[in-house]
Length: 468
Image (cartoon, rainbow, N blue to C red; front, side, top):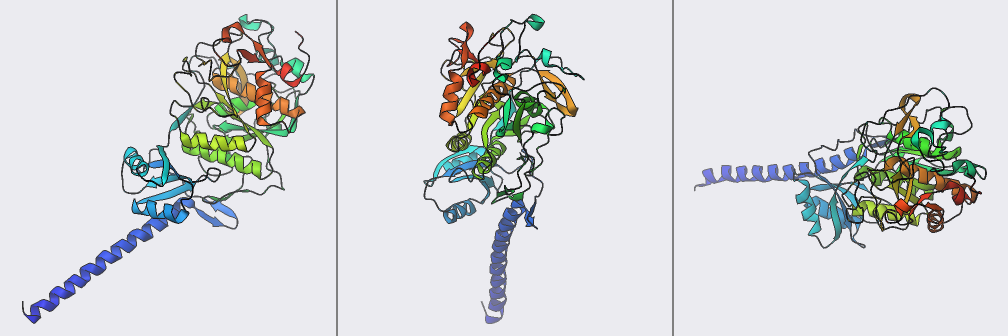
């Protein structure tokens, strides 16, 4: 090759090298830009979030818990090497991160990559979660006048074919206490209609002395009425109705000549939204919402109970870890046992089947003190029974509705737990759980179906004399 031909080839080679280097830098720019885009922009102390990607996003998302001692720099190096990004970190669980794949791999392939790394304790997919309301043709009720006489779960005098006394003895309990505004119950669900006339006076509002919620990835969020993990904002308005129904069972205002009465006449309901208008959500958003509750508890908010009327047959170690952190923070976690008519000892339902000291798994009973046909049960894993069929409560559009499911039984127990704390706000989670278990009415039909063999009794739980 002569000199005249050699020089053009050298020039061409240099151009190709520069193009390749520039393309690599563009990739890095795009990755850093993507992280910033996912986090959102903080201006004037407010978060201006970008729209959240739907669950059907082409990018796979997984939870990865890195082992103790793995630094953030190492995590960043690993995710960049695998062409992924850290979408969010769960502050309450050390090393737990939500990872988003960037190069189009399927979820299981991404999980396999991380499970093969020595720095990783576990990796799992983001599971879908659904409400635990029983399916069926339960006729909705749309009342426009006080309906306490229809609330058989609170006072059963045999109405509509029921058995007199097959209730939680609420009226006797109220002779001791009707609740306490200092007790806060978080309803982890589809949100709550905090404008409902029978709920609005019992909705938690962030006190002025408590700073706005701040997440390292999301920025500051004005959580005046609670938290929406779906949209990452402070407006947990219910679009499904399920969460509003559960909230009314716990704390529809009593004695106000409006609609119904909750187990607590007076309480504070903290609305948390992680399920959409169809009643579906993911472990990703459930974990973010629980992480929020733990943060608020540490900030000085007296939230003592989480009511969780939903579940899945998929076991999530990430979800288990964050519920364990709630336990360590002094928060009781009341969960629906599920509506599959199955033995949860053999076919676990989560989160109710996690073996954690703050979990109470609740089965559903009908107005005759019988286990409902839809309720899960389990001599070792389902703890207690509560009314859960044809339960009247608050609903969307300022209305009321009857619904059935372990979803409805769960807030009954959460409500009784709040009544107990009304009289002893400093009671530990261990003592509260034990006390509720010891306050049941033993039922023959639950002897081989639940741990306690009985139905929750509010009067016994608060120390009131049981009179029928």
